[in-house]
Length: 212
Image 1 (tube, rainbow, N blue to C red):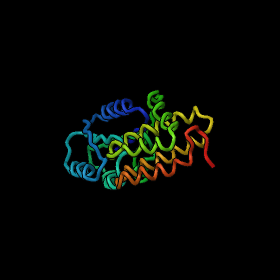
Image 2 (tube, rainbow, N blue to C red):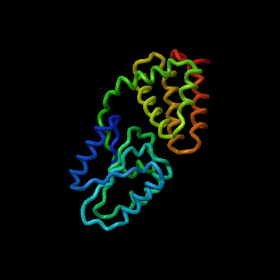
Image 3 (spheres, rainbow, N blue to C red):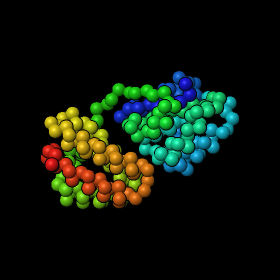
Image 4 (cartoon, rainbow, N blue to C red):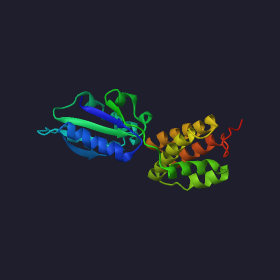
């Protein structure tokens, strides 16, 4: 196999496993970001070079990449050149296109318990009334800032899912936050994506009870 996807919820564990896998393949490891199409094109350009040494392209966090960037790698994954490997990581399998997943050997790491501060952050967000949520979300102006916040929210929501007695309420927050993160990763107007999130979460109360 020439292409691998390592899935886990701990960034350090993902990096450590990627490094060990490259060593096992006797390959040097070259890190690349592919959040945008321009970055994916750099990977494509490198992959056209003739390699005399085994090399592993390390694609960190491909669940944060745009669909356009991921699609540009399809041919590379279908027609690998000699001495070239791909090692990708992701925290959420659902954030990776099915066409990409089908071309990768998936390795799932044992889950690491989330940081208590992240769980508290998500819990505090749920406890806010709608006005407080609007004020906080409206303060997020940049795409990278909004993505970071929603990644934290989703991680914390998943932990709360195991603690809260109202499963449907927490699941609703996860659903809407995941949809928003996917939209943010696809670029577009940050303000519109965040506004849509606020519109949809008003169906869920701050106390963990769904509003009918």
